[in-house]
Image 1 (cartoon, rainbow, N blue to C red):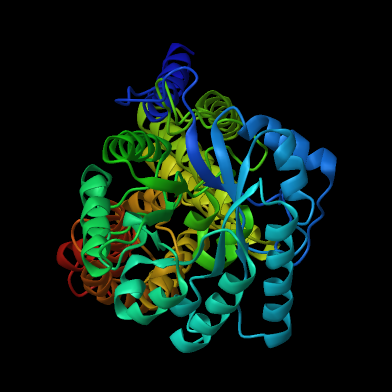
Image 2 (cartoon, one colour):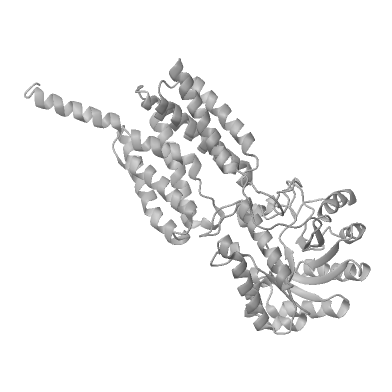
Length: 511
C-alpha cells in the first residue's frame, strides 16, 4: 500500500513540476506606463466562429470592443468596407481615430464597391478617418499589377481629403517603387516572424529598424507608417522565431519604446486574436492579438507574463487523467507510475494544443485519435514495467501511433509551413516502441516500412527548418526513437529466439 501511495505522490509531483514550470510568470523588460496608450492596432469585429464571409456587426458589440480598446490605444485600422459602416460613428463616441482600408481583390465588382464605400466613409467622417489605405498586400497575393493598383490609388486620392497610401510587406514597395506616385506616404508591414529569413525575438527590433531604414533610403522625404508589426503568442516555431506570450510581450514592449524614441508612426497587428486566420496561415495566424478572441487581456503591455496562463486548469486535468490511469492499471512499481504520469501530462498538453490549433471537427478527431493511441501505448509500457504479459491490443496500439507519426512526418516534409510539431503526444509511444518493439511478423514488416520512411524524412525536415528550430530538433529526436523502435525486434521475439537457440544447444538431435 505504501508503495502505491508513494508512486501516486511521485506521479502527481511530476505533473505539478511540469505545469508549474510551463506556466510560471516571467518578468519582461519595459511596459506601458500608467495612462500611456498605443498609437493604433488592427481591428475586426469578428467573434469566435465568425469569418470575413460570415459575421455580424452591431452598435452594442462595437461599443463593448471600443470601450476596451480606447483605454489602450488612440486609433484602429480596418481592412475592408464590408459590414464596417457603423465603425466610424461608434469610434467617434470613444475618441478613436480610424485608418480606413478598401479591400482590393481580383473581383472587379467587389473592388469598385470597396473604393466607393471608403470614399464615402472618408467624406462623411473627416474628423474620425485619419488616412485611407487602398488595398492590403495585393501585390504580395498577386491579385493586381502595380499599374492597376496605382490607378485605384490615384482615383481615391483625387476624391478624399485624407492622406492616401497602400499597405504591403516592406520589400514589395522596393520591388514596385512606381506606386509611390499614388501615395502621400509609405505604409509598410514589418513582421519578423514571417520574413523569408525568420528573426528570433531578441533580434526582431534590429530587423524592423533595418527594414525601416531601407524604405527611408528608397523613398527619401516620404513619411512612413508601419502599417503592421507584431508577434504571435501561439503556433509553430520558424527557425529561431518562437511564438509565445512572453515573446509577444517582449517584442511589443521593445518595439513601442523604440518607436517612441525614433518618432515612428505605427499600427500593431492586432487588437484581438482572430481564430479564423488559422485556415489561411496555420495555427499561428490566429494569435497576434493584444486580447484573445473572447476579449480577455493577454497581459502583454505591463507586468510579468505567462506563456501558459491556464496552467492550473491543465494541471488539474492532467492530475485527473493520471488518477484514472492509475486506478485502472494499478502499477506495482515506480516505473509504471512514472510512465502513466508522463502520458497524462503529455496527452493533456496535446489536447490543449488541439483547442488552439484545430480548425474543424476532422482535425479535432485526428488529435483525439492520436491521444487515445498514446494512452494505449502508455498502458502497454506500464504493464511491461511491472513484468505483466503483453495484451492482445499492444502491437495494434504501437502500430497505430507509428502510423500517425509517419503521416505527421510526411505532412511536415511537404506542407511544413502550416503544421505544428506534435512532440508531446508521441513521447510515450516512442519510449514504448523502443522497449517493446513488434513481435509478430506482419507488424514487424509494417514497422520496417514506416520506420525507414520516417528516417528518410528527418534530414529533409531539418534542412527545411534549419538547426535553429528547436521544435524541429525535438520532433526529429522523437521520430528517430519511433523509427528505431519500429526497426528492432520485439522483446518477446528475442526471448523466444534465445529460448529456441538454448534448446537446440542443450538437446542436440532431439526430433
